[in-house]
Image (cartoon, rainbow, N blue to C red; front, side, top):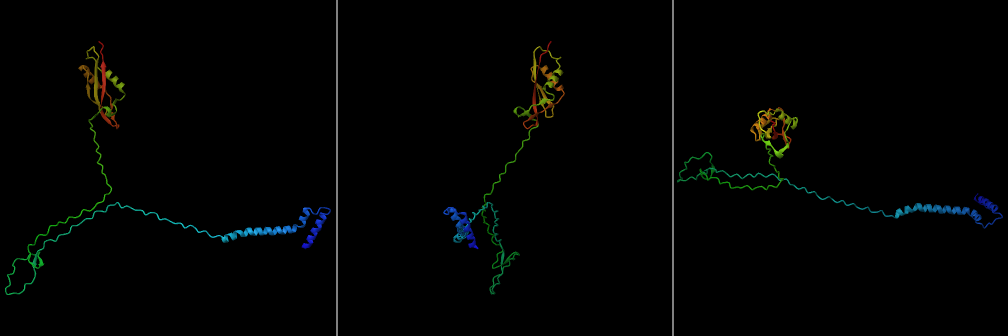
Length: 277
């Protein structure tokens, strides 16, 4: 069957290239196409097989790598400092043996010349012994001195002295820089000045000169005034000024210290007046 196919192919080529140059490459290629295809097939299969087998061969000859051994280092030990001081050990002094009375409890040896027996009464608290000792020596004095325990230095607790709050004198009069706010009349100083001028009586005054005085009084914490004084040279004018200040109705706003607390404070109010005759 194959030969028949080849013969048909050969005859076809002879007919196709009849009256042509058969030395032309196409004629040769068509006649040798089967051989070339077969050769190409084997070459391709061989290359594919070589490519497939090469990794297997390489893995067979390849030595498995040795994994690095991980070395674990232990962390440094944690040293805990014991700062706690052990409590002092109570040392109990040794007890000294009390003095004990004894009496002779031995049996005397029989003899013709036995000495007189002791007729002294044996005390009730005496114990049996080898000799009579009704008045024992006093017990030795205890000279034991306990050793002082070593006490570690622990944290020092500082006790601050208590803060002593000085109670402010309620009668103190605050002046100068101690005042945070000066005292004032309710309604304003102009309202107070108008009340003074409206209530001032000049009928008993006779002078052509300008009369002056300065009224000084204390504004209490409850808004009232006290200790009113006048410092002018005219006695009658001073008396009338004091009377007028006392007659004015109305309360004052007390002064305040730096803490905002109401305090007693001075207030000065000058008065000057000239009478027209």
